[in-house]
Amino acid sequence: MIKYCRSSTTVSVSSISIISESQTQDPKLIEIPAFCKEELSFLFISKGKRMAATLGLISMFCCIMLFPTLHAVILCTESNSSSSPIANLTLNLRKLKLTWDSSVTGTNYSCFMNTSEGLVLKKHVYNKTYMFSIGHAKPIHKGALFQVQAMHYNTSYSAECSFIPQGKNGTSVENFSCVIYNISFMNCTWKAGRNASKDTQYFLFFQYSKEEDEQECPHYIRDALGRHIACSFQDVKDIEKRVYFLVNGSSNESKIQFYDEYIYLYEIEKFTPPLNITVNCSEDQMKCIVQWKPPQTSRLEGNIDHCFEYQIDIRNKKTNANSKEGSNELSTVTRTSYIFENYNVKQIYTLQIRAKGDSCPISENWGEWSEPIEFGNPDDAVLITKIVLLLIALGTILVALLIFFLCKRYCSLKKIFSPVPQPKNKFDELFQLSDKNIQREWMDLPPTKYETEEITTVEEIK
Image (cartoon, rainbow, N blue to C red):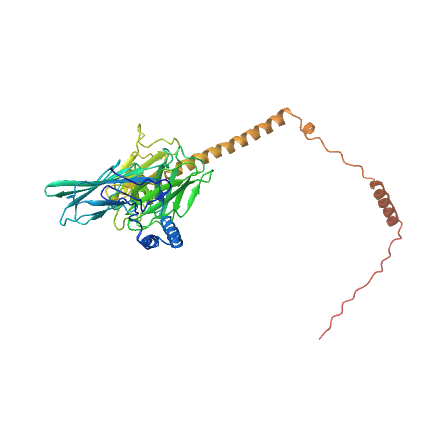
């Protein structure tokens, strides 16, 4: 009969109690973090001392709570044969590490990890332990089967551990995705499970190596209910590595299923637009040469022209139609130049370019479009505008002259422009009387008498 321990509450990722037929019937806790072992030993040694046991239990509980929590059951089974080279198989879920005992030396073991997303096989394991690294492991949120096989005296033996996730269906996050933008920024988003209660809260953890501790999201984004629905990262490094993401949750109403995924960071990068885009057109040859430089990326250095594929979108500015007549497909090239044929000097065009990875180990997702660039012969458009304005001005002058002549011919200017009556000046009579008196006084003056003077000229004779 096989026995196992089920988690009735939240269980630590790093350790779950396992009991099998070949093990002692006394429950024991195995594969806990190294820095917790001293506290656990203290707990068992002080079995007779209630106070010491209480302190040890508290210390162990605090130690376990440092890790993200999952609801799960692990069931391990082994061969009942006493000659089996595999005994006491255990699984450290946090590290995805299998360990076993064997009294036989020189045995060649094979380790398996079988999930809904595929099988991972490692042959020629000579140590009695094996850890599935982040570079090769598969997600386990839908369950997993771990196996160890060995050949001894031409007989095949095996032992296995089944990982069975627990929790209410439909409570794990949905539509989980991450994207890196502007070289070193990353956003991860998700939706709350369709059957998750309103008090459900989610937590995101990530890990670069199974030998390192998990790190929690540095900055959460919440929805209207206060639930975490996204996480933003700054200064993302080691973009060439594969990273483990884990989203678990908690609720007062039910157990929440967890979600995990392995992602190569470089595969989720969204490139910035290509740089230094230039357009040189030739009216004689009726074509334009478009040139640019590759977008920036934190993964590649040196000459990376051959690593990208580019998409060219050239449209008529007036009609917004694709430059390819009768086709909605955009042109794609793998070099950093493009020749635009059938160039019409009387038209103005808009140009946009974006990039994605091609032959190098970089993201194969299309990046951001460049800002629209206009090219063509703008002199024609300016000339047309000037002609239109000139015609409007001439038309205005002609209409004004026509109105003037019509009014002069058929209308009376005196009726149209009647004189404005002037107010009577009451001081005119006074001024007239004053002038008459002055003239009278001037006429009554006696005539002036003038005396005649005789002038004699004297000359000196020498």
